[in-house]
Length: 501
Image (cartoon, rainbow, N blue to C red; front, side, top):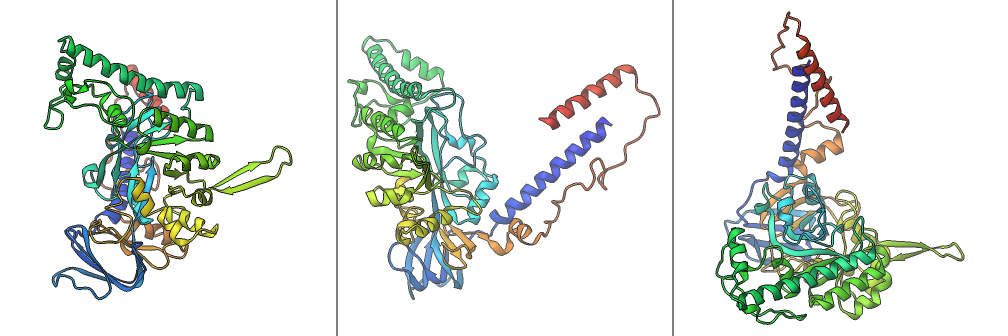
């Protein structure tokens, strides 16, 4: 009985793995073209000028070299023609907490960790992003933190994080909104203490060096750190905030690895994505950034109710990433009437740069969020910028993604029609000049649309039925002794507990 149950569990696990492998391969295992391809489309929306009818995009070595009408291209280039379709830049997801094995850490200050170590390349989230035309994603730790880990920008293609990498070390998440178990007062105190502790630490290591004590050196060697060309020498503390004198006495490789990322923030080298859930949180985030000199590297990640702080945000010229909920609804405490505020329109009217986030990877991805903005009276140019050019600018990738222009990454999405129409589909996707998605060969999409079951992915028809390739179990005529019975009962009990959990 025990062996039969273990065999069933093993077969189920194998079937699940086969299904995942088949579905992942359907979207990612496209023939690569070494980053060289020519795309011709009935219309090319560049977002770098007027749309081009019957336009051509030339991509060489993963970068766009020419965009226009009737332009020349290498005679031996692979040419893809889509005369009835629309070529469009890939969407840019300015902030996401998906695609990781866990979005948050238990510790308050985790700046020494890196989201790279948590990204799951075979997550269906990345598959679905590709199907929705999203080609660049800024993966950041969630808002349940004080100071989160280092973020990572990826493309939704590749079987390893290294293959997916677009920009490592893309910024650190912070939160003015209280994490679980904290009040707003204790959250604010924790933020203040984080940077007060950094300052005291730096002053301490400088004083030790003056006194001829090499504790920092010994600790660095003990932790296995080694100097390189950049960190072998000390340098004065940079940034626009507070300073610690004589920091140039300390070779940078000797600074504690838990403090070094925080120093990068204060010196203005690292972007900060600051979560805020109320207008009061916005004040806390701005004050923290000003006091520690990184206001010009701060991006506010706002819940819908934070539109009330739009004037303050505009005053400090801070870009924002809006929550996936674009309409804020509140009830008048006197009349009981509900009032709706369309949040993107408020920031657009105030002149605040903003990017949108997906409400879901399938039906409510970035195209849907931009279409909502158009439906609420914003222009197409304003709405599209929030999911392409402005999103690229906020994430520090304006020179690489967000539009179709020479010198930028060769990311092109082929739509069957208007990119903001619910009737349009993503037909093809090219990332850095490589053809990575074809809707016509997407096994999972075909299964969802037609019900066709992919080969070798069906589950067992009946629990406990032996697989046709398995040998039948031999029956033992000998009765098990009492100890064996007890062991089997214990194993069965543990198995049921696992199933229930």
